[in-house]
Image (tube, rainbow, N blue to C red):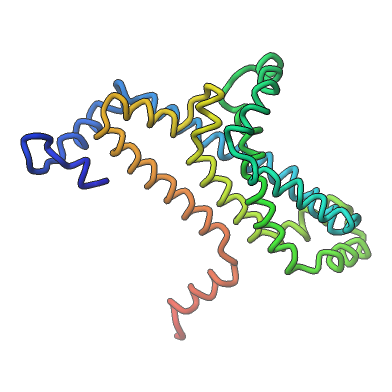
Length: 246
């Protein structure tokens, strides 16, 4: 992709003229909508993660602690979206989004509801794998015995122990949302991928440059999320190793 963007066309050879032109005036001219689309995708990623985690984590904990016989039902519901093609999901969501647009408007943020369904299987698996390795019932009973309310148990006891699974689910959700095209295109919303397709019809070289920049941005964002998920004791151990003994 980098080599393609450096080609000088029919003249032959390589140059960086397209990169220079894009950074000098492109982002303030015809390609400015790409920045808007990138902001939309980042906002959608954040909104999707918030919606999924606020709904999924308490539900999974409730089923695990109080209603274990419903685990298979919950697993089936959460895994189901991965078996349905995106185009079929859009056909089912289109009438719903007609009502949503009438009640809440047709802003791009409404895609977070559809994306929440799309990333549900990945987030569920990430959290469930962490949940299976934690004795949630014992932790809950111990906290309740010491007088903690359900809110404190959830926020101060259970969520910290599921931190790695939650961040892994958020990691996957962000990656899926930043790369999603079908649902946004068919529901006439503008996100990063739909904007890149529009640019590719005008200038394929610039579209590839923007794709590379988007890839670098997504990689950086995911590295930051992964860094936040590193265990604190591991980070402390690394710092101690670097300093060494006195």
